[in-house]
Length: 194
Image 1 (tube, one colour):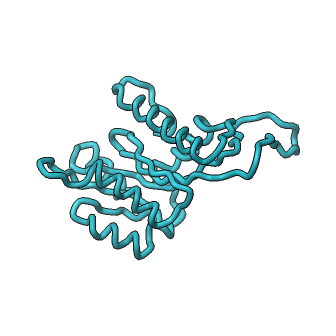
Image 2 (cartoon, one colour):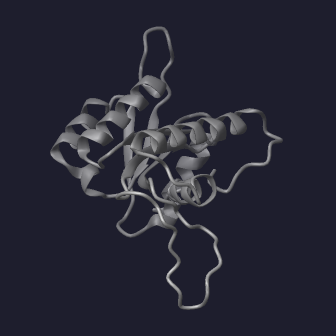
Image 3 (cartoon, helix red, strand yellow):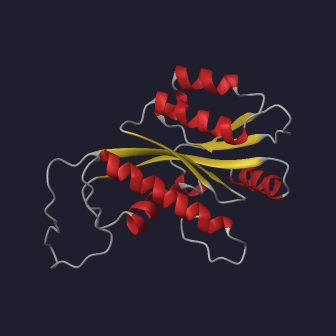
């Protein structure tokens, strides 16, 4: 599989395909404590009001441009994954008067990717979108894996968000800033996540 992905990367770098790495992650309204000091054996806690709520992030990372496309929602269901596929439709799908480059989406075998609803949605896109299924338990083959961790550990860390809407806004603002940073030019120092 690693050899197959190396071939796909070479195809993407040559402009023959668009290679996207997909994954899901989540962020919490309560602080994610990335790097903090505490006494050995102590349970580090920060007081935060109310119950922690989560925002699920379903996204794709373009191998060549390093642009990140993310759909956020309160859940990680097949319908949420399909909403992300609709984002990909708008960015990469066929449009009148525009040449379409074939897209290869690298995904793991998560339950939301293998549901009947998802498989039907993928089948309707097979004329321009191909899925490369990763073997089980192979996160090291998926370039987007570090993005969720990077967002939480570097960009959303040590913050308390009033509600899911504030967290959702922060996620999209951060992704827009990261995408803008990556599009400035080739001499810009790239972040860990991409």
